[in-house]
Length: 387
Image (cartoon, rainbow, N blue to C red; front, side, top):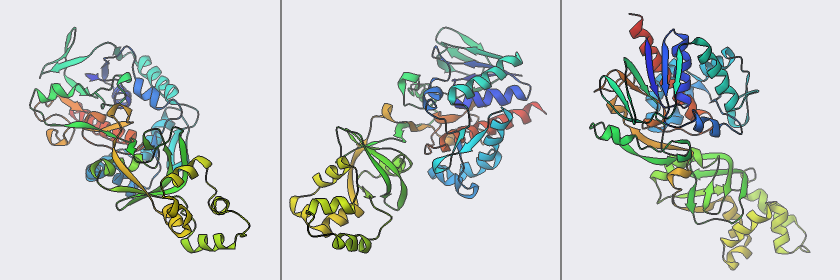
């Protein structure tokens, strides 16, 4: 059976591989002149292919859709992703924060490995410069052509990184058909805040807390506010609660009492500023950011300064613009889909990946979600054609 896939990203690469493996033929259509652009750029410096978090808690990284993903991850889990890499001949390893990386391949190498497999099958065709503008129960309509399909998978991406072709404009196709969608919003993103710096200042080994959520990681103070590995997993909560503040414990390994004892033990011959630098060996630029947040009296009051270090308040104004975000929330609502991710009104069309209304942190969770959704579709098609 020939299956048409629209959108050349991580989800479609996954679908193409497993559909070819199961004996199907695949025609893959991409609107850009180059395939897999976002996947290539995202994995240029190192590709997180999944995460090694415990299976019992993995699904909690999908927020309000955690129950849906609990089932999806049972069908295709992090262990299945690792096994797939092994099948491709790609060793993997667990890095910091339990991120799983291909051992010798970045995104370009992984994509080449899969493309070589697809092309060797003689049942795979890639068509570039094909922008989808509509579909019905029989055809997919592109700007300059149309094709009949038996089954189609749409993997049209999110709405960030427009330079890769991921602009979210396809939502208009669905709204014109009265298929419910939610507008795209930035996810895994930085935030405009009351602290900023012309230099990019790292915050290392701190605890970041927002409402009842806390994470120990690193972040960056930027020219507009704050971003980084500690902020991205919290971005969904922050985006929905902009009236709340983010708090940073810059010195989580020492209690208030221990720090006071260390300060009092220092020689009185040292100036107050030098005592602070002895007790808190921060980067000098970070030291200045903290100092600027205080009045002179607050700075000279050690107890007040200490409380600031242990609970530094960051006022959030808004997320960065959507095109600066790593990923997006929003898209076609799950209520418009059957359990196999086919559209209720167009049963021969399946949707996968970031074009659907869900989100997850970076670090392997987002791409694992794409794989798990796609596997459900592949399984459904395999059952259908085995009858």
